[in-house]
Image (tube, rainbow, N blue to C red; front, top):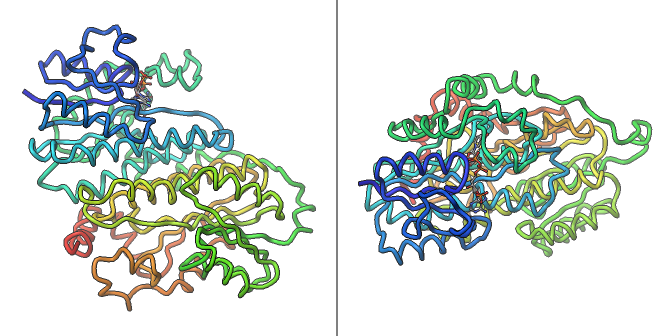
Length: 505
Ligand SMILES: NC(=O)c1ccc[n+]([C@@H]2O[C@H](COP(=O)([O-])OP(=O)(O)OC[C@H]3O[C@@H](n4cnc5c(N)ncnc54)[C@H](OP(=O)(O)O)[C@@H]3O)[C@@H](O)[C@H]2O)c1
């Protein structure tokens, strides 16, 4: 008899899945945030129900403790189904809601997967992540939701390579379903009542879980939509683009000096970008946690350069930086460059270190951007630049959570591009290995240091790409070739990455 753990089991698709597996006689572990007394369905009994709020950072420990108390040391299937949605313009999304969405939809599944590894391995089990068909769509009204689900896809992609032969990894992509999620986000009932029922979607998901396909779109229409989103993304971008809105009079714009803000600008690619913009005479503001290097760079850049100290892993620190930015001229270019990594085999890496990667690389960038938009600080015609990674195309076994953060960031950038907020544009950059302290810190052996691209060359590509308002920038011929290789032969690219990185860890 299978032991199956389902998160978000108390409603919608999760409840329907729980009922299906209950009828099959599986040993269930049903995870929900509500007390059992509030649940009326007979599937919920004290023996199977584990109360854990996935919005809490220690939710994986609560689940672990419950499993230990029940003496459950093997799990055949974990279905990461819990999720929350949100609809509206991204800048209306409050910081607390953004933090909660990334916690529940992304950080909790990562943390629970990490905690349950041994139990899964003992059973040669399977982890199924419930993503969404929208994870590959540029839907501007769901920017953070899309980013959280795209990040889950990116995480699963690299984890599947890492855990190959030990624990199976699968991603399910349901489309719009008639569940309470739509009521919770305030969608009109007349709209969501037309969607397929949770029961019919759960039945298809149960059948898909029996198969070995890594990604499964649930339902025929969603298979077509996912196929289109992967093969003709540019056409979808154009089709979904919102009309631009003007927030600042063009004449006023012409009188103002361009102002570029760069996160993580004290070192590496960020510092090279700051210098590249600096020589054009633009105002440059560098945000970084490293005060010493930051001030040194500003002294070097001279008049018109400002340094602001910020810890992007802390929402309060971002808030303080935004307050300081409000005192400076309007921003013409925002470069979301700051990033850290955590390299190693997923199950052996310290969880807190990995989750900090999400906080800085993804949540920090989203919070800063949305707060600046909400404050009207990004000028009409501004450029948002996002430093993603080539891992978006080739995967990154050995840094699965880093991969997640960079896939999520690219997806968020894409939704911002279609939102066309205040006539802004986005440029997403996919650098390959670059000769910086970042690469040296996380590489298994640094044997290819000489082949890495100098940060100045990456900065030049970013500067030119942003000036030309290019959507995607692949610095250097190598990055372009690898991106094409990854798109045309994803499994071969993953294998090459496994040999080059993971096998050496
Ligand atoms: N509905 C759609 O159109 C659709 C489309 C594509 C993908 N999905 C995905 O499918 C999954 C299931 O969604 P659904 O449509 O069935 O939505 P739902 O009816 O709202 O169910 C979501 C489940 O997640 C739980 N949950 C939310 N926050 C939680 C937290 N902090 N801690 C623990 N549990 C929490 C909910 O608990 P409560 O019952 O207490 O609220 C509920 O059991 C989600 O991952 C969603 O993103 C949904």
